Image 1 (cartoon, rainbow, N blue to C red):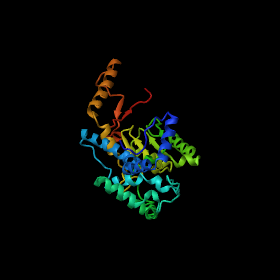
Image 2 (tube, one colour):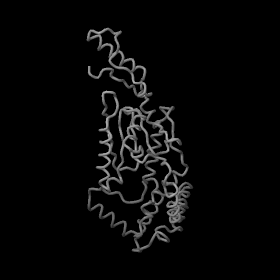
Image 3 (cartoon, rainbow, N blue to C red):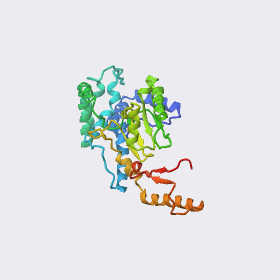
Length: 327
């Protein structure tokens, strides 16, 4: 047990009231729970939860050794999880204590260095280091804020390390595929994209937390040509899902090369590559088309009604063109 509070039935109002009364009435119990809470708070922060989850996900890579890890390993992740645990605490200007005192972050009795040193002295070396890091972050809070403001201005025009869609609360996926007889995209696709942008951006509050993703059967080159013809920047989208879902791109992120060329998500490619048989599927489609022609009384040597579109194919997508759409 963590011993940082009292366990009660969340459906029992009386039990909750009694527990609260006991905590505020018994000063020693309050101090003990608070001390234990300080020792373990970092274990329950959101960053720590994410780190634990991603660690377990990373262990799944052992089943696919060819997976490549393009996420930079940062030695400060563990420390950040501790500091982020106190993010809300640092933002508060009012403190409550069992003695009825009011105090601010700076010099607060809640963060008495002597008290934290006592906590560290009673704990193992690992906890001692954690307490020291927390104290350092609290002392440097104001300095960090100033440095962050300067850093934001310096990196304003730089590429993001991670896709913006990680911060989105809403993601509008625009799935479009409409072509003429020659297989070229028609202007209605551009109009649909522009109308979607207009509708979402008309709500100022919603547009701040919303992102866009474009899903299409076209390869990246054709997709970019279509957007350029409508004067739409690729960076308007958080993600481009191209070639019938076989490739995913994140415009404006570190996956963009220096010359502006987009690179597909390698982890996604590794994921869909599992048990994917390109040659087997290709042979099966050819066999099915020939079987269909034989049933219709045509020779298997006759030309097929479809042909492979080599320009639209990739390692995880087989694309075909219909020779005579009227048939």
